[in-house]
Image (cartoon, rainbow, N blue to C red):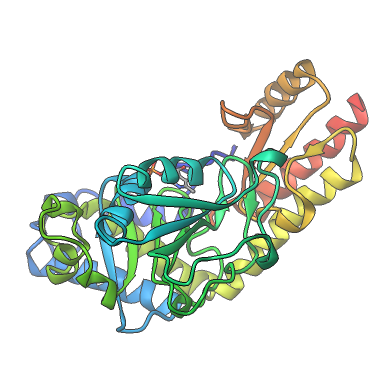
Length: 361
Ligand code: PLP
């Protein structure tokens, strides 16, 4: 069975096997990782190792703190403006390319002035902007975008243009660790783990250290980034089990895959298998994203009728291709092919799609 869920999503089989082997008793610890004190030597080493692997994969310098937080990606919709917009006298600029950006804007508006300087709403969120489509205020609190809109399946191919003095902020929840990034371009980048990086329950926040000074002490303590940075993500009990699995996924990316450039090329290959069938049967498969904005993580498309859509999902499932139904808000099909989806899974779906179109087109 291949699981095309948008998240929580597939994890590498070898990682799951290791977790299973160690679940009752972590070698050298005499207990399950879930039973260890977060302040004990064994867990601290696990967390340091996870951080070191992520730093090495992404080339993150000491100018940035790497935090392991809870509250999902959604809490970042609020923490970002609470720390960087509230009482700043500035406005925050948002590029709106899909459902998650929309939710983030809704939360940011509770904290201060928000300008949506680009919106793809008119074209039903099928694209991302080019630099000539928007203008960022020079004195903006920050520029925010979502690098991969999971529901619509549109992805920025590179960072949007942003003035040097304006912190660039990215919700990378659904393409984190799927490709190399130039972290130095960012003020803050964050991702929940449950797509590419591990189980739900931990959110990775990479924040440039100068921004840690900005939040006001009156904020609830958990919401202040600097509390987490000053306490090495132990301001309160961190989500120990998800961090442990995240560390293993990062190690898998390094040792088994060979780093993020290699991961990106595998991801491109998998996505191409799907988009090639969509293009081959254009008119039957109705791809949602403009070609140059297609996501390597979530391929979204529709079929000519609701009946065909229903039989596509049912037949695919009988063939072991599961969780292909699009998000309830947009319908259609969404095939998520994150890092841990093997090439054979994408190949099996592409072959099924080809057959289905030949039979029903
Ligand atoms: N941002 C993006 C791009 C997502 O795909 C998701 C979840 O699917 C979220 C934010 C919300 O994540 P969470 O449910 O962890 O709050």
